Length: 147
Image (cartoon, rainbow, N blue to C red; front, side, top):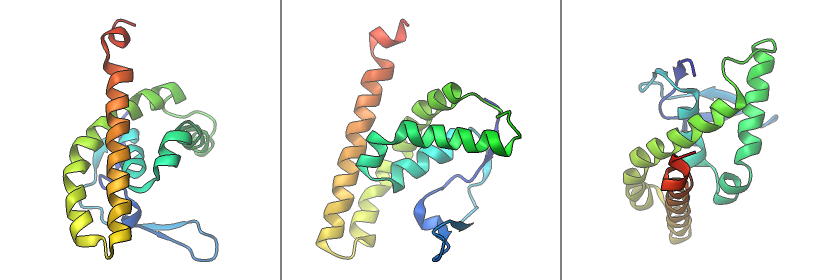
């Protein structure tokens, strides 16, 4: 996949949405901007900002929608295939996990205002770590490496 401009910290706390339309209005906090894989920002957003249900049950739809919209913007020819995006996401997911998970205790302790919010963060971390382990089993087991 060709390199693209990556935000580097694409999470919902770095986004502002229009109240009336619920559409993205702005993205903030660009100090980690770099050239990289498009799947980096997608994985970062999905890991940090999507619920377990969305991550587990809507991932294919999210990636298909992203690729479809990108294809429209690029006048019918996206710079990479959907399959390339899906494969890159699986790799970037693991990288995002290795960078993001150590920060979760900070968010649980400092950002979660009440026990219910803390429990929600803890549940999110647990389900994300389960998905990380499943990803390793699925894409890096001896049988998958010989395919």
